[in-house]
Image (cartoon, rainbow, N blue to C red; front, side, top):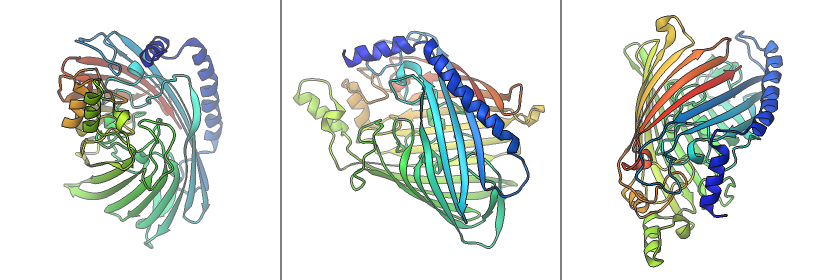
Length: 463
């Protein structure tokens, strides 16, 4: 069976999401994941006391549909121009424990299943941040996070930290140095934004989880191994990390040759006052080393072999990807906040882990429902612009493919996306229903395809 036939067979199997048999399997697993936390909830309280351990749970189901759209042609990584409906599911257990003074350990087993449009291809700013670039839509359980964090106080002043996911209620110093090591997501520590960071509760789109041009290091499901060092003061913070990268683009196996394969990131965070509101700006830069292919060399290889360029044919040790980004969050009042992200990478070598974007700009507005006496609701609106480098677009124009985009040809244009959602508390505490709409112009940076209208709904439960 050829790759194209394999992809088509997956598409037919997953066209409506997860088949009946998988839903039965998924039902019993999620039933366990939701019942056990409910029993544990009886020991949870809201008193401001230090705890030795904590426990949280989340489950999220997202269903999305796009109608037919205009397409002059399609390639191996194209978004299917015929109507599609897909469902993704996830369930996560969050365990935390204080081991000794300043030390905390976190363990997160996770279940995910389902699929995104066209096996998660065809749009660089993909419309569902809960799906991954995997070929198997069946539900799988795996360890998402397992890491240790040690905090060293640098101040005699302490403040109370509320209990939360991977955060145990305790008194913490206002100034400290922290070291974390193990398995985690880089998004746990870097490029945070209180208005736009979590597709389980906020915007759906990949490029509203974090800076789109940050090819953030991770395996296929978004996690990596490494260390993070943090120096935190009341009005600023500095973070540095060095982590593993996969052996192949979008791969699940991590490369142990850390001298030649790793990703380093540095972030500076600063809090400032604007009127009576406190905003935060973050500046980040990164450098990734991996066995990448080079777009120009792939073009030369294709010409020499009288065929389309193939990036995996010119991969070699010693390649790098350098980039930087800025991230701003600014409350305008107690109920209204705005955010902005902008990022860039050199775009000479192939995308290795996240998505095929070389420059990115996004901005948005979030309004809390306290305005209309529903303080647990949120309304969000955002605009996104994604682009790729000259080398990258020439490669796609010649018929090359990455692991996310590639239509076999290219009439280049920036990818424009707008998204709006309304999240409201539904029936009981911790349960939220969120209708969502995204408009995608020039999907995969191709003016010969689209626009695409993506309609979605999310059901999220957390304790």
